[in-house]
Image (cartoon, rainbow, N blue to C red):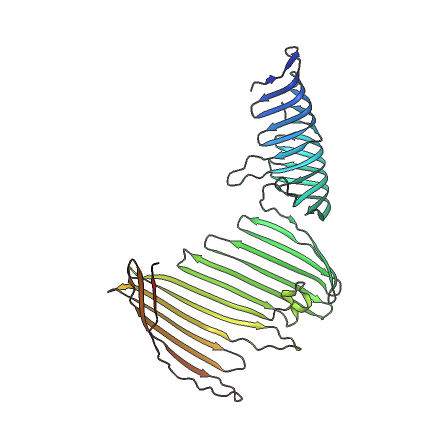
Length: 436
């Protein structure tokens, strides 16, 4: 493409060197260089610019005192620049801007830079929430990868990571690599360090592996696997300490959580948890809210929502729930009842001769290892008559509530409670409102 020079004064020899003085500018396609003065060497297509230099190339803008740049191969050196990089986004990605300052920037080709003695951040101007300071920082926007050498990561002005070399993503996309380590000390485990490694296996699932060494207990290995599909998602976490030197035994914990949703008609969920012993969290967890955890749920449910004729709907749910209880000898707790199973059905049919019919039914089998076990059945059908006018509405409603209890496996020490086998009740609630 043609090169266009503009300035207050231009002089030179055709085919050789051309010097532009005063408000000088050079343009070629999407490349623009402005400066107080610049020299264009036509033979090798090099540009030298001095004084308030501003280079714009595609979405990138650099400003500084002096520049040497080769138009032919997009290489060169910019002295003491402030820079803003906004590369064109790839298909399916949002544009990501980055900015910073440097002692020098080397142009290594199209969309490739080497920053020396500078910093780099993707935060907005005026907000340096996080940034990378490095002796040398390579930014390759063709691969969306940054590589820092002799670098530190700062968060709110405080250094949180320092390393001889590390790389990172330039497009806010996940990337395999080490995450910030955790370092601490506890009375039960002594000094410890954990170094997580993140594996970006695919756009919709990933894995994090964390070796954790505890001086008093040994090496623990933890993993977290996350997955995401169109109708379901979840994660599986597990950790194992093959030989706890302090307790002289193998210890482990695991958790599986997932949910399913097919167009709102079929829903399901799992929440399964297990640890090897009652004192697992008190000995090995590092957060107070986890060390105080005493009940671990193990439950699953399945719900189906359907239509009942043209003006009605129904919802059926099946659930099973139990708990692992972690007992503290100094503060024992009562084991919660399990629901094995719980079945529920609710229906609603509107505009049956002006009336609305609804019902709620439930069956629960309450199970317990040492207390009274029992089954409960409930049924609550109701009939309502919505009366609606422009100025008020009134909804009289009548319903019958039926409950049936059946107790079994009653311990000898327990007192047989007096509970009616059924309890019919008529209810006449209504709601009303007037327009103000």
